Length: 228
Image: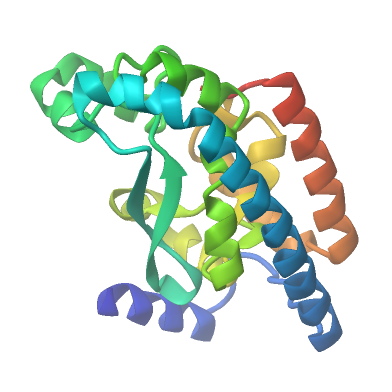
């Protein structure tokens, strides 16, 4: 983690890859206010959905003995590592499954760490993913201050090297539950186009822009489009 912080700091001192647009103090206050308000509403929805999903998860857990929620390490602002929360949509020991099935692992990495018909996804998990219900626990991350409602996609630890010179810029602000990657293709957008969309957000973000992206996200959730 210290190495990543050094890379981040060094990048700030070098010629910039993109012109990072900073929020003013008032904009930061408004953005955080929207984050708190949105995360309170989202956390309430999370509790309701978790209650409704309790029985289906209990039925599934009898087969794989897995929990309803899972946490995973991600890179946050300035390279700080935090645990992102999600509803579990895969079988237990999903990473071990990839190691035991090299052909699936190869397709997984070639497709930007996504599989349209991932054999590890459970039946209930498929529905949850389609409508982005698995993201609801992340409102707790937003309330804690680890994330924002809108921002770059939270980066997996093993993905960091793939971003190359883009990485430090994507760590200049809090990762978001939604963003350009989510609203412009979601799972169908592969790297490096995915990273370029995130860089575009950093150049042109604003409160008005964030609200527009949130509205687009709600539409996608209702339609269940481009998610797997």
